[in-house]
Image 1: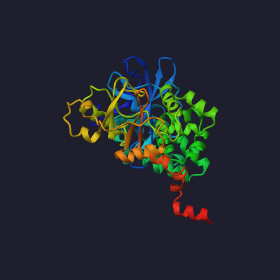
Image 2: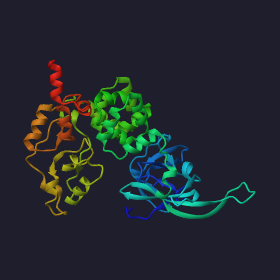
Image 3: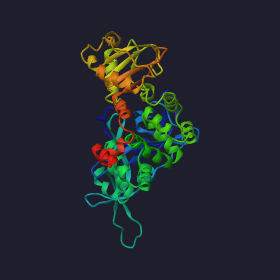
Image 4: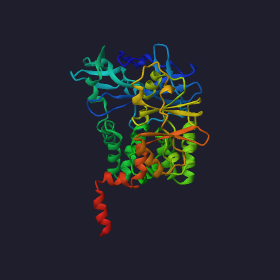
Length: 429
């Protein structure tokens, strides 16, 4: 659906059938979940509440919504069938917003009759408009309010009377929603442990997962251990598999196994595969989700693959060609193509015809010293990891190499503003 589409009033979607990636109906739309953000920003539509045909109510992120029309909503990817539980910083459109009394910027007293959302970029939606029913003054000697006509207004006309900005946690979450993950992590680092847990519980899974990856390891373990177990598993699912594996390795064995059992099977399998490798090896540092294509993929296919929003800049710098299957561990590894080379070739050319024949892959058991020299030698930001059977099992990115080369507490030291020279002087004294 085009980001330039007109807004959709959500009451028209209530009760619509929801189809999975195979086209089968799995349930019906029950509600929409939104989150207020900092002043001046429109509320984000996080996801839908879906009543499954199996009499269970679940949450579906908007990132899973493939298309919306007047007759149905189609989803993409795998659906998490766990029961929906509303969080403190979440607002349900139908249950919490409809019929709420508001005052417009023009001073009109009204109640919310309907709310509209608009797609602002791929699979990201915001509340942009409201339908209001004006509340007229009471007639003399009457206890009932008179209902006026229905009119529409931009969300900004009522924002100040709807957002729950008087709640300290909501204010902090709204502030953090505008920050990059490293800054969110710094804010969490500076909080006392109790406040850190309170704010973490109010953040959505994706944002908390991104921030987790920027926290010192000791704080990751402490914070994850204080979250409700199901929530902790949700956060691990959103983390990069290599970071999740590192974190789980630092947890008590029983707790780690409990979390893995509660994670989605595919996410848990990725993490378990990484946990079999030693920490300071290519296998222990790699991500199992590089960009992998079959030999018949064209340059156009490759450019489309590295352009996806969920692909990081380092991962997008190279595509790997393998025999099917292209999920790791893949079929036989053929070679790699630099993204810069893709830009110099006609779109119809086969990607396999322009592979870098000089780039040898790393073995999963290659140590940190060997991996770092490899990156320096080839001047890379990502490198393929291939096992003894010739399968691509993942790829190491330069940020993960640096992360393992730096001291264990480097994130905490940086957040505390301590210079390495100061630490050296303190040690000498």
